[in-house]
Amino acid sequence: MLRVDHLCLAHVPQLRPLSFELGAGQLLTVVGPSGSGKTSLVKVLCGFQAPRAGHVHLGDQNLLGLTPDQLIGRYLAVVPAGRTIFPRLSGLDNLLMGGMSLRRHERMRRLSEVLQLIPKLLAWQDQIADTLSGGEGQWLVVGRALMSHARVVILDDVSVGLSRLARDEFLALLKQLKQQSYAILMTESDAAWLAEVEDQRLLLTTSSETALLKRM
Image (tube, rainbow, N blue to C red):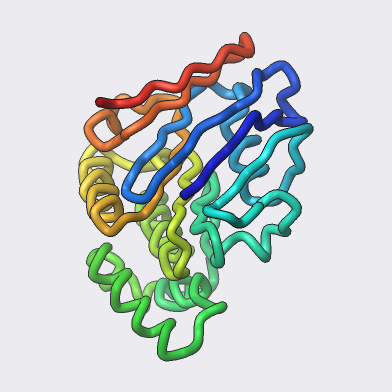
């Protein structure tokens, strides 16, 4: 599904070229300390930064050179780092913003599917997003990203603000997404909590070393 070949990140020139493949129903964690290149990788995949070299394909589609507007929603469902809700909109309106590229009947059908995946969102539909806690807001951002028909999900430091219980709930969601053949890429500083669901782990270090580990 997603194939990255010899990708050189312009903003992390010391990092060795990155190569990996992520198939349907698989989860790849990109793990490393601050400054190791995790967020730069996400920005390149999403079209916010250009790489120095390399290739990124989704199936036969070359993703490099496409703008974020062309990539996000159509090819990629993205949950960026930080609190990225629309604070003055209701929970429901935040979700619907994620499906703006869909026709109305498709958007409502997708909303129903997302609410089945994340039932807790039902309780926040009428609540102003800015009144949600950090963890609740994170769930809302995830739901909004899933409103598109994109089959590749990118989650950048999504565990920030999640309690231990919320992490367990999030693991259950990841298992459902894998069962539905989503390809998932997650960046984390510490991915120990994802060990039971990850299929591959890409280790980045500030010393330029990389390693790709595959679960058997």
